[in-house]
Length: 374
Image (cartoon, rainbow, N blue to C red; front, top):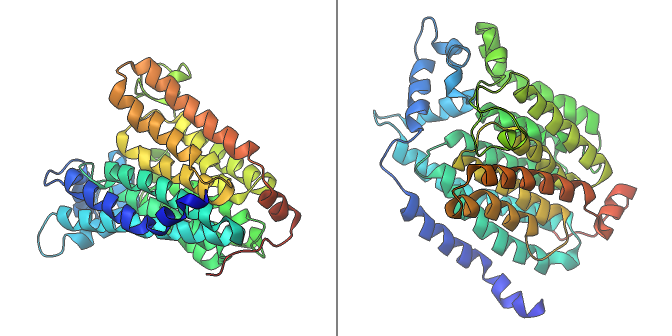
């Protein structure tokens, strides 16, 4: 592995090259799903029934968070639809998130693992930046990009033992899109001085952005239980769910199952595996299988590889991108793709639950692990 050290030193120029190649490839002047954010941001600035603070409750098709609409409205200053500015922002956040993950990896692993961290950042980061385009490009899903960025901040804050920053990162991630709730188990990380207090703080600040909308329209909570048709390529279809509207228990089961499994992983295995474990539940039980979901799962897998596993190659990251992005480009069988999606969910969860290393043992027993400097 020492022979790869020169390559590892050049990881950021290489990653910048990957990023620069992907930007023009996925840059678009077409609206894609951006039209929904423009619509929601416009409603947010109006008064009357179904507008203002009633926007999210009255229009469940938006399926986003208040922060995403506020950011969209800010990007529209000057009379434009904000798409070009949004793409600049979304593309810039990709490398920034990767920098945070690299620092989290170095902080949470022994000093002797630095080369392994650098190689994981190089290979896994290239995969993450490539898939980042699925959300930041033609799909224009600024909510997913914002939530992924704040998820990276939450991982960094956990590694750096900054509970206040962690709580705020979880709140902002959830305010951008509700799947940020899967980050809550990070507050129980054993290296934090007062895990329960941090969890309570995170829940409190997470509720703040949503509270005005919930008070203005009590239907908001029930609407976000999620109405969606079960897509034939989804994990839910592979579990035998009929291809019709998903039952209302799906969203609560995703959130509850993901948070509980993530909490178990934090306390029993390693906090770095919690995000992958929680999102594995979402992957298995989600009725949708959109391409712009992929970078979310790739990011979770990279956190697992970089922070929790002590390997120089991002096994979980590569497995996830092959299953969720490469396979759909080569296979046209929806049943087979659904089974692959479900298999990836179970594999991610299994890796998170069964991961073991000397570093894990040291972390769980309360002994300090020698870490690199910040």
